[in-house]
Length: 241
Image (tube, rainbow, N blue to C red):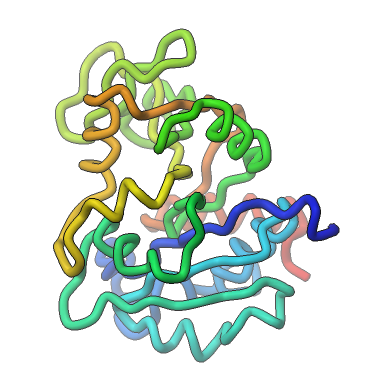
């Protein structure tokens, strides 16, 4: 794939404590859990590269040095990897992105370190650019199947988003892939603990959040059940070489 069709870089949020997967993550960061013959991050990076991404910033915390030792600068997979570390305390998902801004251009993707998302990244990027807004959330018609639905979505617009206070109209779910302008996170004071869900809600309340509905379900390794499902999917897809 030529440089002309590269996509904007991505921040992968991989700094959590992964408590739901203990004891698997007692001494191993979630990104390095073996899934279908490889560390999960290997699968994630291969997927991103196949979609045209060539630069990833890994926002790491818990056992993050182990991830850096394993993947280095990304040359093994033909993708450039930079790293930022939370430091002595976890900064939250948005706080970690704020800390990574010096490594990022004006616009970038954001996804979680435990998700495997097979959507059309170029279509998502195009929708973000076409919106003219500083943030975009991808959504999926979930109907409570794979996790609790948390988005009211209608006619291409997000009407409500809330992870805690669910409503009967919430049939979609935050898919786990966002696109942002750096100004969204530059407004957060450096070193402050801040959550990405709050960033989304702030953007929504001010009319600054675009939406893109994806058709492919998400896979994740944040829970034992999700880990089993994702391993089965990757093996069936032949992503083990």
